[in-house]
Amino acid sequence: MYNAFFGFTESPFNLSPDPAFFYRSEQHEEALANLVYGVQARKGFIVLSGEVGTGKTTLLECLRDYLESQYIEFAFIFNSRINGEQFFEMIAYDLNLPCERMRKTDVLFALNQLLVEQAQDGRTVVLIVDEAHNLEWEVLEEIRLLGNLENRSGKLLQIILAGQPELDRKLDAPNLRQLKQRVVLRCHLEPFTLRDATEYINTRLERAGMPNQTVFSEELIAEIHLRAQGTPRLINAMCDNLLLSAFAGEQRTCTTEMLDEICTDMRLEWPGSRRFRAARQSSDESFERAQF
Ligand SMILES: Nc1ncnc2c1ncn2[C@@H]1O[C@H](COP(=O)(O)OP(=O)(O)O)[C@@H](O)[C@H]1O
Ligand SMILES: [Mg+2]
Image 1 (tube, rainbow, N blue to C red):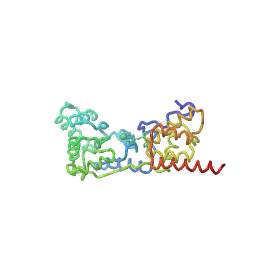
Image 2 (image 1 turned 45 degrees about the vertical axis):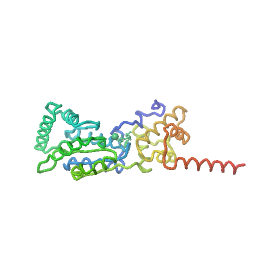
Image 3 (image 1 turned 30 degrees about the vertical axis):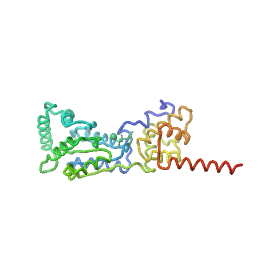
Image 4 (image 1 turned 180 degrees about the vertical axis):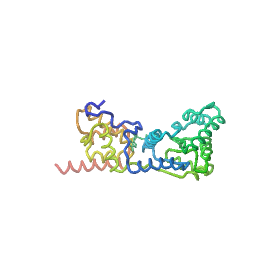
C-alpha cells in the first residue's frame, strides 16, 4: 500500500518466511551452517529450537533452497498436527515415492529403497518437520524408528526437528529418551540483540530498495527492539504498521508517537511497559511544574 510512496520495489516487512529477505545474524548464520553440516555429515537427528517468531521457519526455507540447489531429496512437513497414517502419507507425497500412499508398510518399503539407492550414489535424504513441538507421541516414535536406518557411512535419513522450546521439554520425557540420545546437533535461536535488530531493519529496507534509510531513527529502532523484545516477527509487524502510519500522514519519518499508538492497538506489553509509562508521566508532570 505504501510501497510507491516510499519507493520500495517490494514490501520490506512481509511476514512470510522469505529467504530472499534472510538476514544473516551471527546466530542465524551459525544455525544454518549447523543444519547444512548435519545433513552433509549424515549426523541423523538435529533439533532447531526457538521461541515463536525468532526465525525457525525462515531458516528451514533457506535450508530448503540449499537442498534444492544440491539436488538432495527431502520431505518438508510443516503441519505437525497429524497422526501416524498422515505422516507416512505426507512423506510419500513429498518424496514422490512409488507406492500406495495410504499404507504404512508400502511407504516404508519404498522409502527404504530410496534411502538405499541414494546412499549407494553417495547421497542422502532429509526429513524436515516444522512445529515439531506439536507432534503426537505416536508420530515421534515413528520418527525415532526412521532415524535408526543406517549403513556403515552414517545415517540414511537426516531428520531435522524444528519447534518451540517445549520441544526440548517433550524430548526429555522418559519414553523419548532414546530419541533424545540420538540428537547429535542442537541449534537454538534467541531474540535479536539491539545491534542485530538495527542491522535487520536496515537490511530489509535495503533489499526492498531503500539503502541508507532515514525513515527509522536510531532511537526509534531502540524503542522497537525493546517493545518487540528482539523478536523478528514483532519487529516486522511494528515496522510495517509504522510505515503505514507514516504513509497515512504523508510523513517521511516514523515517530515514537506512531509506535505508541501501534503498541496500544496491538495490545503489546513488554517488560517495564507500565512502569515505563508511569515514570514518563510523572517526569512529564514534574517537567510541567518546573516550567511554571
Ligand atoms: N534472520 C532473519 N532474516 C529475515 N527475516 C527473518 C529472520 N528471522 C525472522 N525473520 C522474519 O520474522 C518473521 C517470523 O519468522 P519465522 O521464521 O516465521 O519464525 P518462527 O518460525 O520461529 O516462528 C518472518 O516474517 C520472517 O521473515
Ligand atoms: Mg515457524
